[in-house]
Amino acid sequence: MSLWLLNNLSTFTLAVVAVGGTILLAVAGSVLVRRRYPSLARGEHNDMVGVTLGMFGAIYGIILAFVIVTLWTQLDATQTIVASEATDAALIARDATAFPVSVRAGLDSAMSGYVHAVVEDQWPRMRAGDPSYGATEAHLQNAFHVLQTYDPKGQAEQVFYEQAVDRLNDVAAQRRARITMARQELPPLLQVLAFGGALVLIPLTFLYGLRKLRVQILFVASVAGLIGFSLLLVFVLDRPFSGDLSVSPAPYREGALAQYWTG
Image 1: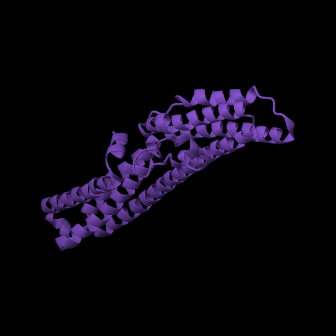
Image 2 (image 1 turned 120 degrees about the horizontal axis):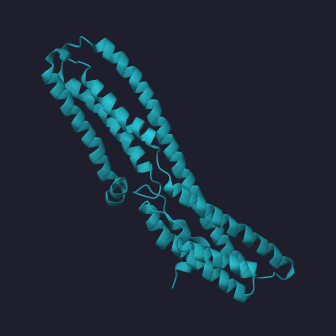
Image 3 (image 1 turned 135 degrees about the vertical axis):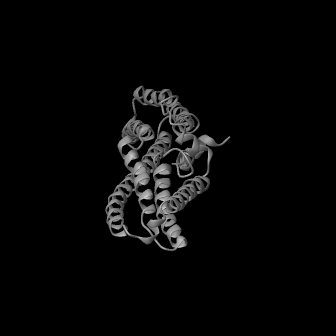
């Protein structure tokens, strides 16, 4: 369900639904509680409620901050992995020019097939939450086969050969890391703490009595809006390959790899 929402609704729409919906529900709940218990408006229990709100708010704020920073770091790490994989693939394409035509053609064919498979096969799978090695495995094996069956001639070819082998190994390692990142999601315990905490903290604001209804609504709406926006960040950052803020496959179309997308 979460993947469908991320892939079919814009971040703006999700923000309107999440933040706006949280505020509306909180304000409606506050008004209903105030009408059911008019004595709350006198603020007789504000001292106790204020201390409880402060304590719960501090704990919940630390949890949300930890979750958001962790997810943002994960997104940044995923972007770095993708950029590194694409860079190594581009360098292999450049190194191929140092080899004979038959070897160069074999490497170009394998790397072209690989980047196309990443963008056209793996990326939609990762976006849908079903990552797999898929068609990239065959193309990567073809690239390894080309290098394993070639005996470099001369010192210059030997240098480029060793670099190409190292970078091809790096591509394989980064592909594994990328797929691993695509499979990760926020642990259930942190999900309960993040989303369940809102169900505890927001209703507590209903009990903090203020004489003027407008001020009460403003207070509750402010807290609910901040919590709703924070939960929206958790929701959109949890899946690095889904939604508007997802990691882009653009690096596989740029630089030396652009030649594989022309014609």
